[in-house]
Image (cartoon, rainbow, N blue to C red; front, side, top):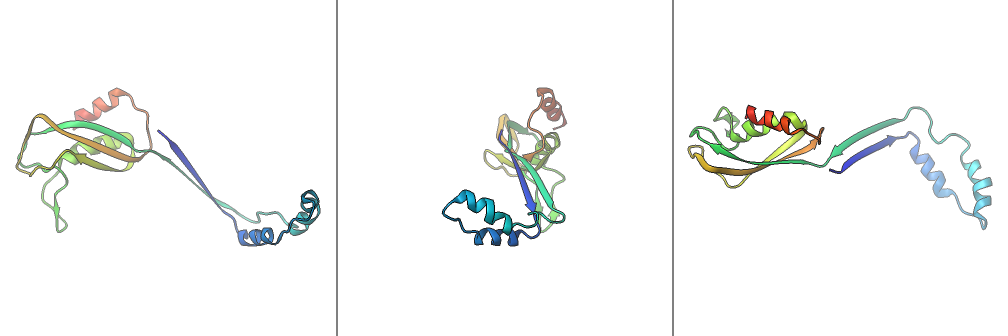
Amino acid sequence: SPFEINITFDVSGEKEELESLRRFRYADNPKLAVRYRLPRLYYKPAINGKTTCTISALHDSVYVAGRYNKYSRTLSQTPWVIDGIRKAETSVEELIALPISKLVNAKDYVFLSSGREDVDVRTLGRGRPFVIEFRHPSRILYLPEEFVAAERVC
């Protein structure tokens, strides 16, 4: 999956440097302009003092798909919270996504299932299809055994 690295430098006096570049005018001979005029504009180093740098690295999302069966009539599909009060101890989403989330070490995730069901409805047969998008994971390479272990926890 694509990997993105962002590097941001914060240089004090940056405005002064940009202003002097704006004032720089090319002569008829660009080589002479660079050789004689540019050094006069830059009599001090471009970076003075301390410079801070921020580095961030991001991966594309990791997607995990599967099917789940729900045999309980008291388990909701997604976290069930009304007016800040949790109505159910856990949910299908949490039981499936949280163990895998620990494996991929993602910043957050989105649980997508094929359809909705009421709390008191069981899901039998082949199960209900789902996909989980794990956003900005720290890992992207996994062994099959790691997912088998995460599946046992679910």
